[in-house]
Length: 299
Image (cartoon, rainbow, N blue to C red; front, side):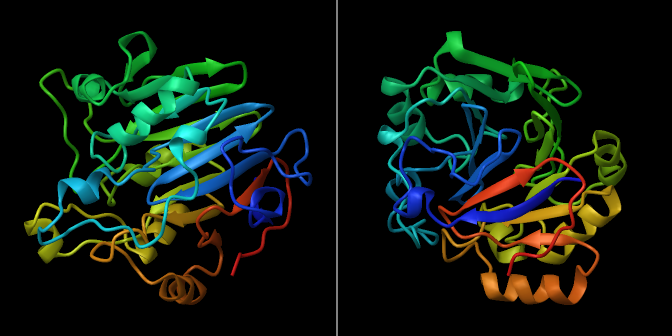
């Protein structure tokens, strides 16, 4: 199996920079991962930089100012999007603004020429958000996208809070199994459990799962905020699907849509004993290591 372990809290011991330089501890086969807050991640492997669902602006705070859920940030962006350099690909799991953010997309483009992978069902929305048509790859569950040698994306369905398809049968919400060298990372996108999910994921043999754990409830759902896994559901999915590592996310950004990270750690200590898990901190770097290594929880 592959093991996720803390590498350095901040790259080079200082604030996270737009170069996303791998820490000195990183071996040539290892993947460095940074949590950007919400569902956003940056992954670097052998000089290639991939972003998943980066939300690095205040687009939602501007949109929802003065409403029931004003979407004010609980923490500042860990890195300014206009400072990021060397992005090879941006993966967006669906069309919600905190996953396909026009503020981040437009700030990235002057200094990067990435390939954008988005649900085919959300192609028009991606174009409206500023993704250049020449750099856009639409996809859906069951397909396979090759980004570079040794880097592939395999989309799977996501249920937010239900499975949805457009008129062509393409899924509106996706998860991605991203292969980087010898590491297979499953990012579920926004998702809740659905029938057949563990069996499907078991066939894809992911090494680490990046799963949202902010949960769901009637109040949020009835006011336009669909939910995600609870902490326990995320752990149960990993165990049922044979995924040895869980990294939690989608908490700590908006006060109406979060869980306390210490409560999440307590829940995992009580109910996820066979599982190795991490409740990360924004901007920290983690190493994903191929090979058969003894895993430990990250407290």
